[in-house]
Length: 91
Image (cartoon, rainbow, N blue to C red; front, top):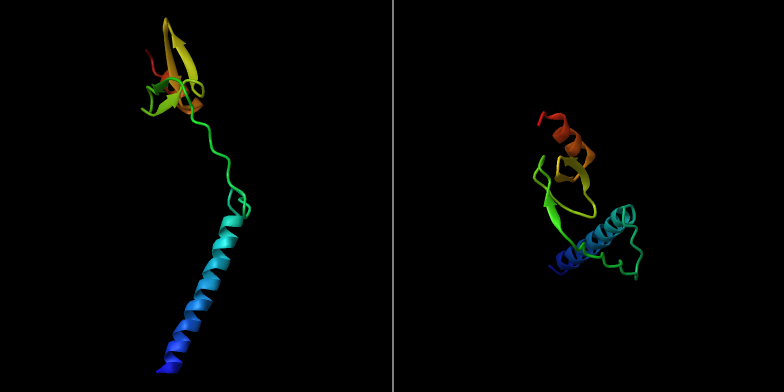
């Protein structure tokens, strides 16, 4: 019985080491390139008005939006694709 308990403990330790090794490989290859001991800088929150894209319905910040004017009205879009689709429809 003692050998079985020791074997289970050893397998658990080896499994934890292998899992930690593969997790470190996956996180090292990520787009964030986090380094050990360094914190990621906080992202600044966008401030200002949000507008709903009339094509896809997504909300986009005015500072980041693409615009198109039709008469006196300004439309805000999340991407060029949405803007182009919206403008291609006869209004």
